[in-house]
Image: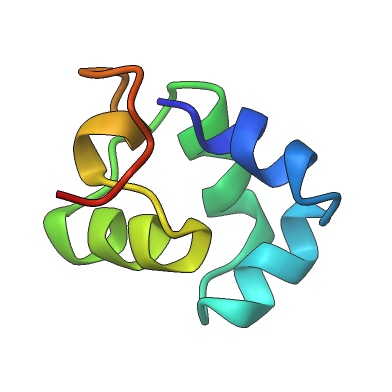
Length: 67
């Protein structure tokens, strides 16, 4: 998942992302490290937050645009 890359590009911390999405920082860390898989609602929240498609977030395409 491109979560860490997108977060760093936006220059925000794991804590800020977690607070903005009403998650905890530990969950963000686990998603970024591949220790935990996001459910569908969380994937949508990440994609909306970064304004990218879920396919881009999951590295299924290199096109970040929403379809």
